[in-house]
Image 1: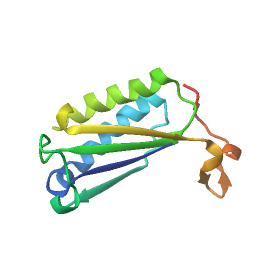
Image 2: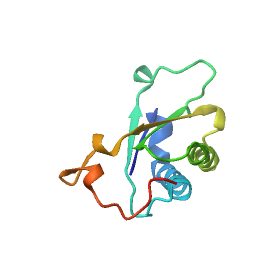
Image 3: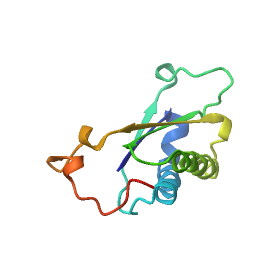
Image 4: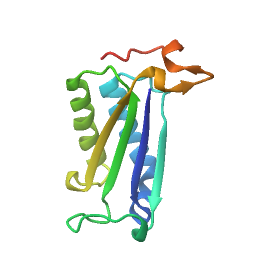
Length: 128
C-alpha cells in the first residue's frame, strides 16, 4: 500500500495531473513492486498565497509525499526516490523543483476495507 499526495501551484499542477499521476504510478509500481491496479493519488493544487515556497524555486515547485506500510529496505526507498525524480522530470518538473518525502507506518496503524491492515491479505509483497 502506498498513498501519494502531491502539492503544487495550481496553475502549474492542474494541467499536469494526468501525466504526473502516470509518472508517479510507474515509479511506485517499478520500485515498490505494487500491482498496477493499486493507484492512490491525491493532487492538492494551491494558489500562490497558500503555497509559500523558497525564493530559488519556480512555479513548478512540487512536493510529493508518499505514505506507505513499513517494511521496505533502504535501497528500495532510495530506488523509489530515484524513479520519482526521473519520471517526474520527464513531465517538465526539474529535479531542483521537486521534493519527496516518504513516511512509513506499521500496518496495524492503517484501516482498510473494514480491518486493520495487518489483518488484511495482500496480493503483493511489502518487504522488497
